[in-house]
Image 1 (cartoon, chains in turn brown, red):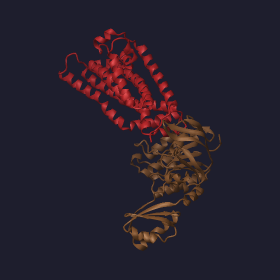
Image 2: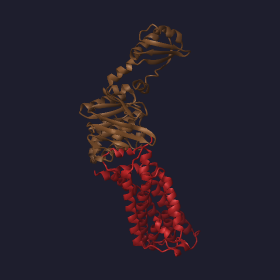
Image 3: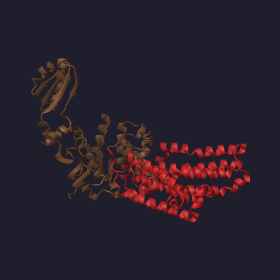
Image 4: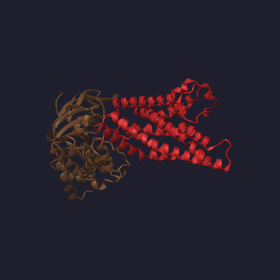
Length: 306
Length: 260
């Protein structure tokens, strides 16, 4: 098997007839690695295998050179923030993190100290005594992160850690993850949102239909995506007038008009999105909806695997 | 802090703060209410002449505790130990700690023992003390050894039923229903079948230990071979150890796939 922070060899996991992960062989190196894929792609299954929550149907997976299934010793070196919104709801954030961290063998005083430090790191110190049931979704995400980082693990595995967070929370969490990596820790973070991963790392693994479809630098993937014509639908009160303005814009490669709006094809979506507000304002067109059917990972994967 | 102590402490906290404890706590107040009503009937002369503090307590202990409250409290606590963690998807947090699954299982069982004892034993003591109001003061003191024996029976019941229901919780998908079926069909119905089949139930050995159980099963007791108290204690402790070991073994090897 290849050596790495996480290494998998012929790793497969299926649930009855349903494939979770299929014949994955890879080696994840140090630093931050993004695991990117649409919902249902197999990211969570891979994360559960990596953390020993489930057993491989075939093949094997190791973390820091050790197998993970039924190996509690490796957990001292690992932290995991699962996707599920699951807690002991009647406990306070502090009591919950402290209770979990005490399972790592720390004394009561040490557990409390580590829990407080972790809650401080995720920005929840002022709400530490509130019941978790009273937390917002974003706060619950942060308290999950706190229990994952409290014992200062070497490898941190984060399953959709930014889900439900407000923009400030996202920014703080991204900064925290980057700081964590800068201290020599290794992080594997999953998301189905490309720009979330991009803001943390350039190293990504693309997962789709239970397979790793691409791995490497996110910028190369970005370039591939940018070559792919992108569809954007603009719903507005005067589609004809808007179409008249758009037709002369060089970034617009094609257009389709209907009663509700205009569907534009562009190979430079970033330029298009940046320029659209000025164009709309200049013409006083009232835009009611902006849809980007291609701006999801499934569309990107469909394109990449063609 | 040892991992076992840490698991125990965390889970005791969770158990004692659960809604389940509130409901079970209210349920456990019924023997106290029953004892109070019994004493009122005895002292006011409404009750039949042969109803005394002793027979009142014997009835509460055998019919109330051994046949009902003990079974219900251990069932709802025991089956929840593992099953609730699976249903609530919180088991992930325990599995992500450097603690063996065997220790997690035992720590949770210890937490259950304390929580169930805190609900059952004090209410039994209070029920006893209330029932004894109906007796002259001197006689009440004479009955104290019976109280200690009753508490011993309850402790053995908490141990054995807890181990059984924790095992069911670790194995079955709908453990409350499986446990309820076991409690009604096996533990209750089989106990009333004359012969040796009743010896396959936990309740048989608990009833064998009750100091005032004689005659509680009426003519059926004439058709069965009784079990001596020392053997009953050994069987109950061995059953507890066996079920606990089996439960821990299964919990260590079983894969719990949480629904997405």
